[in-house]
Length: 441
Image 1 (cartoon, one colour):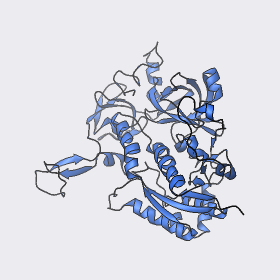
Image 2 (spheres, rainbow, N blue to C red; image 1 turned 30 degrees about the horizontal axis):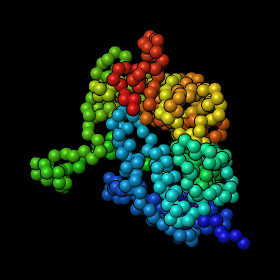
Image 3 (cartoon, one colour; image 1 turned 60 degrees about the vertical axis):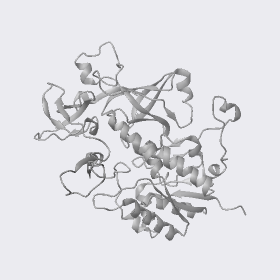
Image 4 (cartoon, rainbow, N blue to C red; image 1 turned 135 degrees about the vertical axis):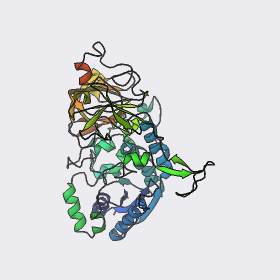
């Protein structure tokens, strides 16, 4: 009889990862649960959510009778995810730290810990996704460091593992896995890939996992949760002139210290007639397409552009205003799940596929044009609403997630084209419609 396969499962303290561990146990594998602490802070009530999640994850391991480990990647998260998040926001972009967290933390730091420290034959998570490998094929993978550099392919030939959408299309999380490396994917199992969320909840209810079943799911940014983003970024501590932290209510020598970003007051300006409609605390707090809350105005206005030079946020009066629609963008160098661009794209320099730039949005038909530096132009068959710099364009061909690239340039809006601007240029050297808007690097 062969030795039991050892699978290390990431446990978040939620229902999805708990059921993933349960299903692995049912398959007869030796399962170890690991909780990752990636963020270290208190919420507004002084409660550390990570501690509660860790307790819930530990209780899952007790119920399933499997070993439990806890690891901290707070430092790595700060350096590789949160610092980039702040940097992107300061540039006026719209970052996605959940994609970065999967790339740098869950499928890099944690993955290496599971294999190198815990001796895992495979790693598992509670993501709703699938791969092209059966479990046994995952276990057959050799964990050997491949040669780096130009001649790597001379030393090995292998079929790339495909990242496939989950059976539950609404819960599918391949969007968040679109930057994961091929090496990590080859050693990963997604036990929930063929299941619906309702069925996962049913399994939890029938197997004494009520404590995770009752938890509310947070759809916010991973380290912020459902807290107000503006309050989080502009959160104020109090300090004296020497910089020492003191309690609120101290003498008047105190001055505010902003925890992450400094406010950059600016104006809300109507894109149609250049009227000043109000003021804001920082242009970086807004993303294209969102509703802008303008003091004193009851009618809705929507962010259509941002001027980083002046600090102004341009708004339009309708949710379907043509200034919100674009059909052209360019990404940075694309991360292809298979490590190389699709053969058809390499051969023809153009390829039809689909993309999305927000989780759960409908897939958009598009044409990719491959540039020599590995970046791509994406031309949507129909103009889409709310494209923003810093978002990830995630590409699909059928049920396969091909990879993703960060949006660094935008073509002109439908409103700009209607006004006759940029007649001879499809995309200017700057990242948007007006000079000085949005850095490109």
